Structures are given as structure tokens and as C-alpha cells.
Length: 355
Image (tube, rainbow, N blue to C red; front, side, top):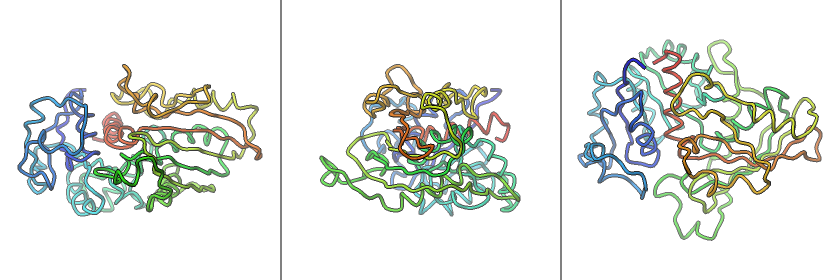
């Protein structure tokens, strides 16, 4: 990489913002130039972090002052990583995108026809819609939002099966960690020793996003794929990791479940061969053990700094339905599903010479 790209992080002190920070600190391609927020303006970053974390921030990062987003100097940076709430994102991200690339965790722009829901492991080719986005909006920059964190593990686990066998229908039930609600998140009185069987607007988001993630660029917009999909979302008292029970029917027949397992194990993703710092060598890890995956066991680092970027699949079995498959999938909602996944998107765009 001939140079380091100058980056700013807006919404830096929230949970998604901290994931951006952790992914960018020491990154060989990026240099953090400024931090911006709302509630922490004028404070040192180290004094403004929301929630407890075991991550050891370097002193020079902790000493950085969080400034108002209005003070962002677009002439001194190359890219903005945005972790601001969706309610503020339309105006703020749109203004920044007039001149600079914005990689976002917000849902605000996800459903617009010239904006990809970008998950480069499975739909990296969607970056081509950014030319249309820039032309239509008169922007020099662009906005690239990532998917809802619950949609990510589902999308990655479905994609190799979709490509080889086609998909007729998908049914999914989620068990979503409390960090998926941000900070301060779900009140402890509500979630300790309890399960909450509804997450507002979540199910609709997932159903919309999966179809767009797998869509095709046709006539200057992303045309959604069409198959039946339904889901039910639940909040459970785990800290990190969204786990899902998935039931699918394929269009084409498969010989046995070992064939499906091998299809998932062989999947390299569209990030393969690009030497991206945050891309896992194997995007999917398949377990034969019926008791895996588990958030507490599989999402901890344990010497693998990319553990949070892998999608974990287990419990693969045939169902009683024709061409039916069922499995459990687990992904890290604040790493692959938020800031570090956003940094991977930026890496992909750099590798494609789009930034």
C-alpha cells in the first residue's frame, strides 16, 4: 500500500464507533486524523468511551479530543467512518458524501436504489452502483452502509448454497446479543434471566436486506432477488454474537448433507486473493459437533485476531421438507456486524482502486 489513508471517525465514542477505532488503530492502510461526536465534544476520547471495554487504547488515542462534526475538515482527510445514529445520518452523511467517501453503520440510506447494502464477502461487485450514486446525486464521494448486524451471518451462510443450488425459501429464528441494541441498550431488569421475544422493526429489516444483498445491478439500480423469506427475532442475555436457527429449501437437489458442508467449507468469498487485512482466509467455519457454535466459546479471540470476522455454522441436517436444510449460524454483531466489517468494506474498495 503506497500511502496511508487519512480517516476520521464520527460517532467515535459509541459502541459501533469504538469498533471502528479498534479496527483502525495500528491498521497498515489507515491513519486516524480526527474524532467527532455530539455528547462528548471537547473531551478526551479516553474519558468519553461509553461502556466498559478490555481493549487497551494507546495513550495518543486516549488523548485525542472529540470535536463537533461541524469541525470536520474534509480537505485534510480521505475517508469518513460513520457510527452516528440513523436519525442524524441522512443530513450529516449526505453532506460529507458530497466530497468524501462515507462508510456507515446506519440504516438511513440502505434501502435507496443507488446505495448498496455492502457486504463484500458476498456482494463486492455491488460497488459498481457507486458510480451511479455519484452521478445521480452530484457527489464526489459516496455512502456505503453495511447490513443490519443480524442479516450478516444469515447472508454469508446462505450465499454459497444460493449460488450452487438456488434457494426457494428461508425461515430464520434469531437469538440476538444485548450489544446489538447499542449502549446503554436493554435495561438489565428486562434481560437478566429472561428472553425478549420481539425487537422493533428488526424482522422487516432482515427480510428486505437479504433480498437486496443478493440482488443484481440492472438499469442503474439494484434489483432484489426473489425467494420466500420470513423470520422471528429475539433478544437473549448473551453479550456478543447473534445466533440464528435457519431452515431453507433449495431449488435444486443435493446428494447429502456432507455435500452442503463441503460447499460451505470451500467458500472463499469475494474478498479472497486481495490481501485485505481484516478478511478471514475462510469466511465460514463449519462444525460437525452438534453443540457448536456457541458465542462464549467461538467468538473469543484465543490467538485468532480475525475470530470476530468469521461466520460459524453448525447443526447441519436435512429436514423433512423436499430439498430441506437446517442449521445454526453465529456471527459477531459488533465486529463483522459493525465497525470492523465497515473497515473491511473500505479495504475492499481500496483494493478495487475505488478509494
